[in-house]
Length: 126
Image (cartoon, rainbow, N blue to C red):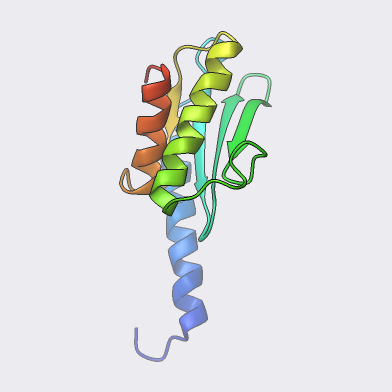
């Protein structure tokens, strides 16, 4: 730690998350019947996608910047839950009921957990 600049610490933090994400991705795979629910968290926003890894296509993408949620009020955790609910509703409209959850290398805690709870609340099974 001694002698490292702040930039080095941030880079290592991102690299560690990416390493965890690669480790998770070795074990899970999205199919057309059961796509992968990917979560990406930035400092301000949260993004979620349903991905079919066999064809390499994103089936549904929702974020806190989506038109339906752009003016949503509340904490980041509350907005993350709204993103999960919206994703779940859109998935059910497309006939997707079950998914594989990919937490993206983040801890299953806070905003990531809120998004998962929101998706389950909307009717997704994982």
